[in-house]
Length: 322
Image (cartoon, rainbow, N blue to C red; front, side, top):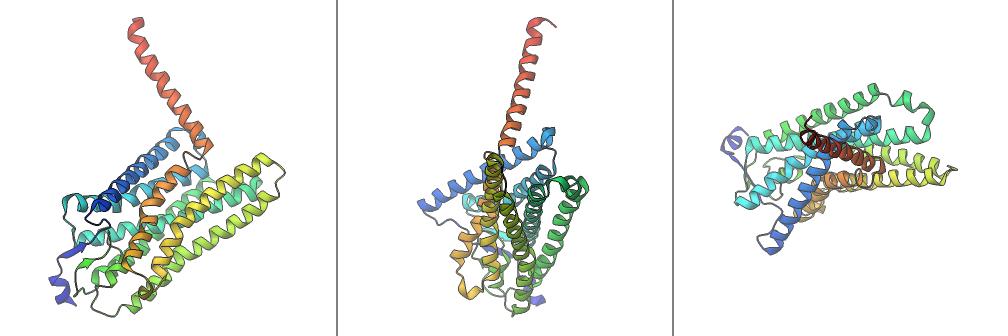
């Protein structure tokens, strides 16, 4: 095993884009999606930070989701873009391990945070009188810290194993980032024990949180159905439906890739599904929780008006000689 690792200098990422006009078109689309996610999530963080009316548990959790998505997409896309532009698809052994660690940390933290957000909506709609007790600042902080810590622990275990696997076959990873399932095909040892561990980890971090989310929203939809207020019912349905849509886009392809046996998947299929949970989901989160959120848009208008007023005031002072 040591001799294999000594000869290993790095990997080649085959990437997502074919060397053609189609590849160039896909490249431009990915860059635009990345910029949208970057601007949207960064704006969301700043808006929640600056607007006092958004200092609630729901938006506190949402700001953390935006922070995770901001880092999550930045772990994957910049390397993918530079590989295509420079034509250098090489990634060092340590660089690959670092990418695995960040990807799994942010991915694991997001799965748990989305479950926390579903619990927040469940308590807010089903037990509104107890919301301040069940979702206070301390509970929110514990949820967020728990998501980050558990995501980091899980990531450290998988990264450590991936870096100690002997790779004696082709060093070309048929993916656009260092994804553990894609790397296992290059191993020159039987990895069935680790694949079983990966299966259990996926159940704990993807399947169980997703079941919890579905159960929470099942109770929410039932409570919403019993509401007498048509406006309140419509608002609750809208919020929960959007959240559930984003969750499905993230969990379903992620779980399929990590639970389905390698013999039933193709590299092209893995890369296509990975686009959903690494590139599209951070953008969808930014759009759905901002443009489709009335409270966020109202807060944005207040912040914009405040900035415009200050600029007018500053420009007025020199003219008035004050």
